[in-house]
Length: 163
Length: 246
Image 1 (cartoon, each protein chain N blue to C red):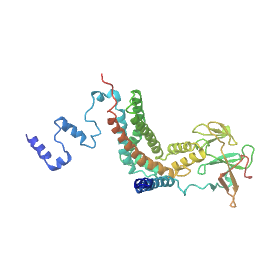
Image 2: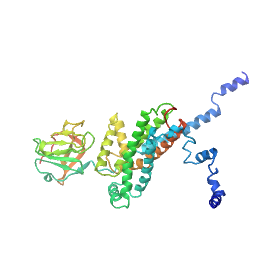
Image 3: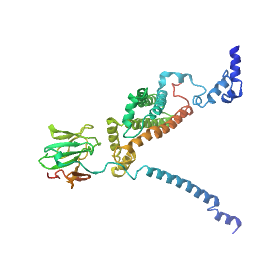
Image 4: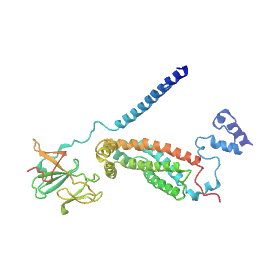
C-alpha cells in the first residue's frame, strides 16, 4: 500500500466535510425548529370564549306554542311546536356559513338571510345550500329550576324537557 | 448676477456637496447622475423610449394603484392613532373617527374609498397587461409577482373589512372563517386553518387582533417589498411595456 492510497481511503469523511455537514445541519434544524415553533405559537392553548354549558332562565319564561330567539347563546327555545309539548333547544347557527336563520311564524320555519337556507320545524334543511340540519341541544332543569343547556351535546329533534 | 452669487454661496460648500455629489445637471452625464445618485429617483431609467411616455398605452394604471397604496398607508397610519382593536372599543372608535375627530371622516373615507379603488385599479392594471400581452417573455416573472400583489390587495381588503366591528364586518368574517373551515380534509386542514385565522373557535377578540396585525403590519410589509421588486423588475425586463418600433 502506497502513501497515496492511504490518503484516498481516509478522504471519505474529511474534517472539512464533517464540519460542513454538522454546520448546515445545525443551521437548518434551528431554522426548521423556529418555523415549527412559530406555527405552533399561532394556536392558542387557552381560550377566553363563552362557555358551552350555560343557563337560559326558567321554563316559565318561554310561553307555550312559541319559538324564542336567545341572541347571546345563539339558540332558539322551542316550546309546544311540531306536536311536542315540552321545551326543546335548537341552534341558531346556520350549518352553511354560520349566519343566524330567522324564525318565520307564518310559515313555521327558519329562513337564513345570508344564502337562503330554509329549515323546517324538525331543523331539517328543506331549501338552500346548508349541508346539515340545525342541531338540537341537550338541556335539563338544574336544581335552581333554570334550564341548563349543553351546546356540545346534540340530541334528536323529539328530545324535550317536559313542563 | 446676484442670483448667481447666491447660488454659488448655497452650492459651493462641503454640506451641499456631501448631499449632491454631481454638479448642476447641464450635460448628459450629470443628468444621469441625478437619477442614479438618488435613492428615490434611481428606480427610474436614465433614459426612456419615446413610446414609453405614450400614456394611452398603459393608461398609468399601475402607478395609480401605487399612489392608492401610498394614500392608504398614510391615512392608515393616521387612523391607527385613534383606533383600538378591542371588541369593546373598535366600533365606537370608528364612530368617533367619523363624528368626533377633526377631519377624521375625511381620513377614514379616504382609506375606505382608496381601498375599494386599489382593488379595482389593480384589477384594471392586470387587464391592461393581459390585453397588451405585457405578461409575455421576458416579463413572465413580473406577472407572477403581480398576481401575488393582487392576492395581497384582496387580503388587505378582507382584513380591513373586519376592523369597524359592525354587523356587516362580523357576519362577513363569520362567513369567510367558515369558508376557510371547509378546506379539505375538513376535520384536519379546515379546522386548523379556521382556528389559526380566528385564534379560537368564534369571531371574537382573538380574531380581531389577528386581522388587525395582518392588516397594519404583515400584509403591508410584504406588499411594500414585493412592490419594490415589481418596479425593479420593470427596468430589468426592458422598461415599461410599450408599442413596438414603427
